[in-house]
Length: 74
Image (cartoon, rainbow, N blue to C red; front, side):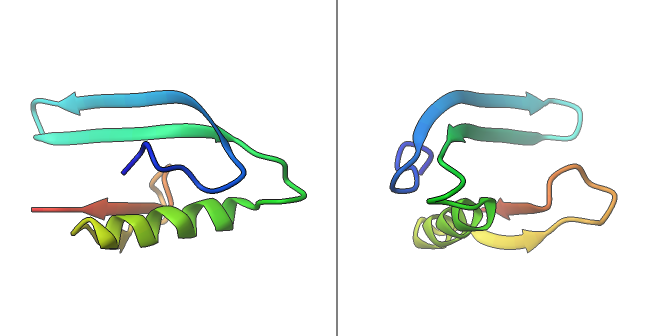
């Protein structure tokens, strides 16, 4: 899912990690894009759609969280 970036973006850093105590896995990728062609909302929409297509469920995190969107899959 992270290999298929939004059209017009250039993939940068791949992020991954896990928290053994809480059993949470984190994966992400940063992208560079021309703000005239793409917005952050465009990129987030791309991944929400891609996550759903791969069986993930979208959820909104709490206001105090540093990330505004997340997807879960069980």
